[in-house]
Structure formats: structure tokens, C-alpha cells
Image 1 (spheres, helix red, strand yellow):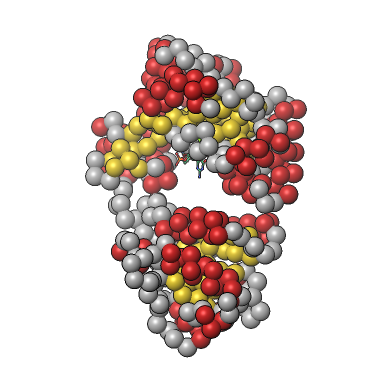
Image 2 (spheres, rainbow, N blue to C red):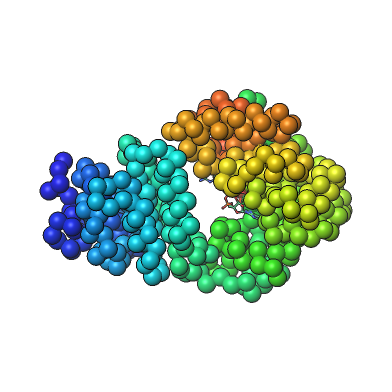
Length: 425
Ligand code: C2E
Ligand code: MG
Ligand code: MG
């Protein structure tokens, strides 16, 4: 395969190439054009071919200097090599950030180390660009396909970097949804590594929207965190989880814990521990079966109110879990200030472990540290048997992820635990 085989708009034809007849399945796919920018024609060809197989319009640029002329051509996704002879990918990220909305998504790829790729991704996000994925070269066709498929997924409506809010969700609509009981909880099992027993579950909120169907939290969590809504939202979620928890425990097939996410902004109300304990006791749900997950960014030594809340929750028996560990800015000091008993390693780290020895070493170190201070470790986003083996080798205690189960509506979750671990294996 060589350069002439590539539909390079830089090479003269500025007309986009259409997907082969019969491939385009859905109109939005055709609209979701992909522009590949890489000085390596073989890579351009590989990405274009795969994108067209998925029914996307795909073009390539082997001379990155021409990108500016094509930025306004309506590509939904730009697949960008970081290291090119004339101009590098970071400079191009800056050009993309100067575009009006809606800006294309970017997939960053490179043969440089994972850490460089991740800093490029962070930089892109800081510039307000949606960097949907990073691709480490050499990559397999299956990996390429996965990131292209993800690039086809519709944007979450609260993703400001995408510049579009197709669902037009508003704070007022969410406030109404709270009062109409449209928020529902799904439950994702956590499996103990080794015994395969279901030792926990995480409650994850969804909005059962009358017109748009079931919405994931990414579509509305920012609205829920507005100062006017955050306490009502937290209370609604807590009540739903406690009511579901009471049913789950009454079913008799479960003796694990049940985790609930609390927004950092919801950690401002000193009455939270008392309200939670009262609600647990009136529902007959033991508080020591509940775990509150908060992200590491919400923990800080100057957050006196948050520390007050966390300490009193723990005193009432509620478990405390650090969510998305590895994505924020942790310090040992930050982690030592509150009585956490669980650490959840973020799925981006789990995904990186396959290809990145640094990530594996960091996870092993975090697990050792957590165990030394008496915390258990949950690996999030475990999707494949290879992920499972990797987190097992690092000493994680529990796995949560699609490999075990997707988040399930309550009835299905009850079926799942009712089947027992042998029936599931
Ligand atoms: P999180 O707490 O880290 O939850 C895990 C997310 O990862 C969930 O997304 C879950 O569906 C997804 N996930 C689980 N296993 C896999 C896997 O194997 N692969 C992949 N790709 N993803 C997996 P979800 O439900 O969309 O929730 C996203 C985030 O929204 C949560 O992240 C949490 O930060 C927030 N959230 C969810 N429910 C609540 C809630 O009730 N209250 C608050 N304040 N935030 C919530
Ligand atoms: Mg969580
Ligand atoms: Mg998490």
C-alpha cells in the first residue's frame, strides 16, 4: 500500500470520497466524516478503510500543514498523529481549539509512550476539544474499530466541549423529573476475585426521560450538580438506593455492600450523615451495608465540611470509597485525611494496563498502599478476561465491569444475584 492508494485531499482533490456503495447504513454515519492526519500513508489507508467499513466518509491528509484549509469541511472526527515532520499534533490541537462549535472530536495516535499520549489527551481536553480516544501505535484492527465506533456514539448533551446540546435538557426539566420520580437506579455487580462471589454492587442513576428514553448520567449530572438541585438530587438518589437496598437484602441472596455515588458538591450539607442514617433505619437497611463513593478530587485537607461529613458517615458504619482513582490529582496526604475503606481504580487506568508497564506498576503500587492501610481495591471497567487477569495479578480484590455484568435494572439485578455465582460462571 502506498501514498497514491490514499484518498488524500492534500494531494490535490479537495473533494471528500464517498463510502463504497452499500456500506452506508445510516445517514448520521455518512455525516460523521473522518479525516486522518498522518504522514504515514499506510496508517492513513488503514484508518480510512476501517472507517469506510463502518459506513463513515473518510479522507486522509499526509501533509498536516494543509489541515487548516480543511477544518471547516464538517468532519465529525479527526484522527491525528502526534509526531509529524512539518507540524506536530499538539500544534494542530491548538488550531482545532480555535474553531467555532461544533468542533470535531479528536482521536490522538502515536508510537510515543502512553504517557505522552495521555498528556496530549489531557491537553486537548483542557483546550476544550473532545479527545474521544488515544491509539497507541502499532494498533490492532480491532482496537481501531473500537475507537471509531466510539467516535460514532452521540455526544452527551452536557458535554460543553462538543458545543451541542441536542437533547435540550434543562435544570427545570430535571427538577420536574425529580418530583415525577423519573430517576431510576441501575445496579452493577462487583465480583470478588478468586471466589467469584458477588460481594458488592454500585447503584448508578439513570433518567427515564418521557421523550428521550433512558439517559446515562453524563447527559444530566452537570445539571444535577447545580447549587439549586444538588441536595434534592442527592436525597432522591439516596432514598431510591435505600429502598432498593432494603429489597435486595430482603431477597436473601445477597450479603454484600451497596455503593452510591455522591457528587462532591453534595458534600456541603452537614446534615447528610444523620439524614442517611435515619433513612436507612426506617427502611430496615443496615447503614454498614452502604458505601458512599466520592471522587478523589472532592477530598481536600481544607474541605472542613466534607471531612466532617465523611468522618460522621464512617462513624455511623457507612463505607467510604474513593472513586475514579488515578484520574484526579491524588496525594498521599489527601488520601490519608479521611477514613476511606475502599479504593476504586478508574477504568481508563485498567484499559491502559494491557499495553503500558507504567500503568501496571502504578496500579500494583496503589493496591499495596491501599492494603497496607486496610482498604480494599475495586478495579472498574473490567471488560475482558485479559483485563481480569491483569487486575488479579496486581492484587485487586473486586472487579466491576462489563465482563461480570452491565448495570442492571433492579429486577434483573435480583435475578442475577438469585442465580448464584455457579449459575453465572
Ligand atoms: P462511576 O461512579 O465511575 O461509575 C462507573 C461508570 O462506568 C458507570 O457509567 C458504568 O456504567 C461504567 N462502566 C461499568 N463497567 C464498565 C465497563 O466495563 N466498561 C465501560 N466502558 N464502562 C463501564 P455511568 O452509569 O454512565 O456513570 C457515569 C458516572 O456518573 C459515574 O461514574 C458517576 O461518577 C456518575 N454517577 C452515576 N450515578 C450517579 C449518582 O447516583 N449520583 C451521582 N452524584 N453521580 C452518579
Ligand atoms: Mg462510582
Ligand atoms: Mg468510577
